[in-house]
Length: 237
Image (cartoon, rainbow, N blue to C red; front, side, top):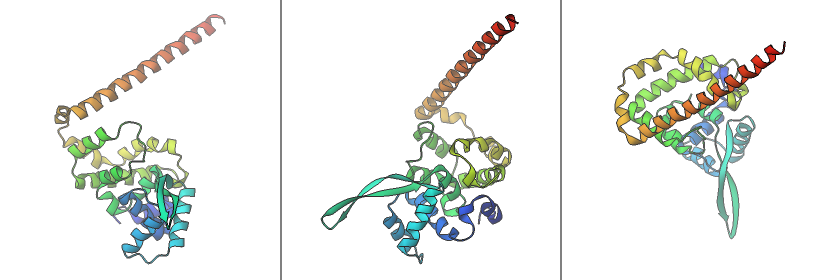
């Protein structure tokens, strides 16, 4: 494994013990192909040479949904004879995405995986950031950065990934960065100013700075109001 096996198994329960091989195969396929209905997922795995049966894959999908690694990403119309049925498509959650990155075939083209899994929600428009990253780094560099960042991330989380809540995912990125000096070195090697010549990139960075400035101003106003109320309280004492 390109990530230490012991580290992966100690922090990602679904990738250790019973069912781990099939769990990994499901996460890998959905990462590389995007959301699929259960039967199409089964066919993809069967065609890749996996010796599995449909009920096994169906159970693995249901278990991964229950544990927060997969979610229903949408529906697809299936024609059975003269009848049309709606079947759910299943895709990675951010937790599933993190777990899938421990698989080398997924790490080889992280941006393609993000493009295939467009149902994963970003806190901002995804188009510009993905283009920025593509302009800065090669696929090989991204794999190395992903390896360093993921290793740092798994070391940083206190328990199994399964116990991390969605709102906590970003909180562990900073300690992960301190665990991954390779990332800082890669950024130092790049001339980032040339990116500002790309209008889409410039507009994204400009909007990001404007939004950050607005939030800081709102925070400052909030602090001033708290100070004002505190001073009023102290004068009454």
